[in-house]
Length: 374
Image 1 (cartoon, rainbow, N blue to C red):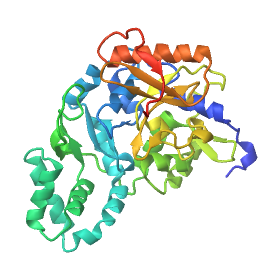
Image 2 (cartoon, helix red, strand yellow; image 1 turned 45 degrees about the vertical axis):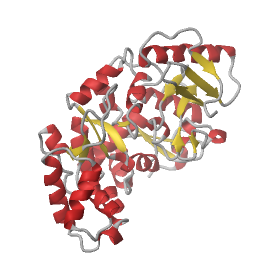
Image 3 (cartoon, rainbow, N blue to C red; image 1 turned 30 degrees about the vertical axis):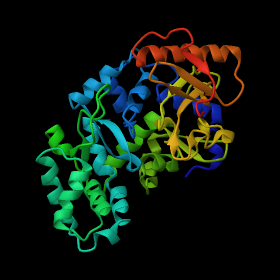
Image 4 (tube, helix red, strand yellow; image 1 turned 45 degrees about the horizontal axis):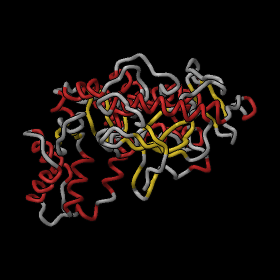
């Protein structure tokens, strides 16, 4: 392995600009929403609306109807994948990513073994599959069906077992902009009408390909960065296999970073316009060291208790929070002093958000500065 001194050092601003470029946040990309979802390896979707705001921050001319149409045509789906959380993925990625993240699902299931004493998991998986493939079911209906077979088991453990054993997707209208619907689940196979791809023996080709795609969307990055993003362990072997074809750097703390040789790495002085990101945006969740976007003194400021806030980037870094009310008024809370030029840019970007995402042109005073927490 090469010595530490042979690898160029990327400072925090250089890492910031490289990551923003991969995330389509330096300038809005001219690409279809489906291509963006694929490039970004999915959109964090714990709540229904964030995927739409993630794409608005990244794509030129994006409107919610575009992603809603992809949902309704089943070209994208909502399911539990990375970090045991719900993501919006393309149909193709739903089929290939879910097998690759099965190991964390198995570990999660292991935490509920005490509530599954006497439960035949293979039989449970078969019964749950038949039940949800006969028609999409709510989590409560799945739980009640399984309790009929194992009345002494822990109800929550039975629900977790079904979720961990099966690749379940949330069917529409759940997740469609402007519509409402409770969570109803079926298998990805039934929803898409195809058989899911299986991870190759040993997992090397699948994992190696995932490393390359992760670096394309989130690099430069360390092994630990990707493990945090994916919720996977033991990825070092994939990085070492790929090392001959990767560029290698160090951050200012000496941590080894990998990247695709031809991936964009703009200069540290490249302008970064303000961007309004929703809660749970993957930009803030996909690295072990988040100082490339979140200054150390602002760590933890995007949360209040267990509530995540929508975040504002200024000059590429976390600089505040925001809230868009039902009446189309946007409140921006800045963490520190901004220049007049920065405030004007934030207002202009905020007015664009209101116009595109709140159903009408931004009127006078549509964007105001204040506290979003009371």
